[in-house]
Length: 283
Length: 301
Image 1 (cartoon, rainbow over the protein chains, first blue to last red):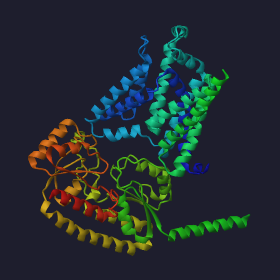
Image 2: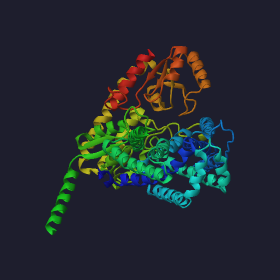
Image 3: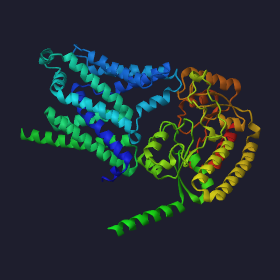
Image 4: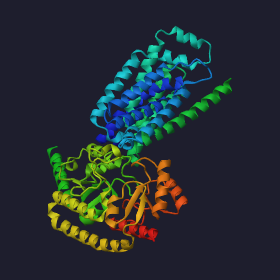
């Protein structure tokens, strides 16, 4: 079962997936609670637009996509919706669609566009370099540290979204000092995490690691700490068994990880249904 | 304890010697390189190809086995240029196999010595040339196959000089077979030289050049960009004006847009094989051309 960890490239894949998986699982708890699950696809698309743009102008292939994604994240943090009929999700969807279209338009005018975007959207966990691991460790470590120290602030900011229909939601926002600042830092961390993890594992695995563990955690616990711990646990299990699956049956690594997350999600759903059924009976 | 260590040591050494005497492990990036390497290496080699024949070699999703194969390989054969640049260099680095890294004896760039077509000048680079070094689909000319074979033969001799005469003899047979086959392919195409065709993607220039076709335009307005409405209108007009009978496509492209042209004009869409293994019947490099020539001549009639 542990034999895949005897090979260097599998160990590297394991390390980088654990780093990404754990941090994304945590950030995912915020993303799911805020109801902005498509933020990942939208930011991924904005960074593709950055690639297309840098190809079009002919330079800045590494920096421009990052700047694009971070500016996108900042813009999203500034969106304030007061009309109850509108959801932030809808705006994020619009951003996704428009940036996708703009990307296609830009590619059609620039030579290398297509293959460069493929590189951004489909990372490859199996052949990452030591430098990539180090960069990922530093960036994700810093994000984790920031969120560990200020976890109360971040959860408070997020909770203001979870009871949107309640009247006291506006109160929470008003009560929380510097809500805008914490919201801004949150989007900035999401932006950084997504830009760097998409380059390593591709859009679909990143989306799955952001959403599936968090949803699983919410099904299994009611407390913030419990949800986060369960999400991280699901993530770690998926990384281990996903890479094991990829190695033993020779599947591409990214899709194996997603398949494992899906499997764990099924198990958690069954547990959740049984738990609810039993709880209903007791009542 | 010392005894055990020395036994282990001796067995390792004898294994090393034994494995050196046994077959050479060769990893090629594509099926065409694999076919030629097997023809040259004969029973001295065991060849594995990474990309399948029906896959677009631009996009290959790496699997763990590729890196494992590479880590055990004695020889690595790449198409070179930038067709596989998205995956092959990083896989090579991950293999951590010093024998086959770029510059080592076990590294073969099959494109060395091929006169490349469509090499972009710095001026027209922005005009839609995807490939910096020139069009990378050079194996679709059987005479380039001979250059590939020479490069592979040189690589095999570098890592296994004791088999030099064997490899050289196989290379000779390969070259003679290609020359002989080329005569029959040319004979089959004789009546269709100068035929105007449309191609889906810009990957047939070497084939076109060898067999005297004339590709008038591409379904893709720019390499890698799916056909746009204005491009379709342009193609339909071209097909009608020039009485073009055939649109050449590849197994990994959808035929939906060429179907539009087919319906409007009556030109046929022919899916040619871009690699050995693209279809089950194509088992080696010779059959790749057998298949394409026979399909093309039937369609052009």
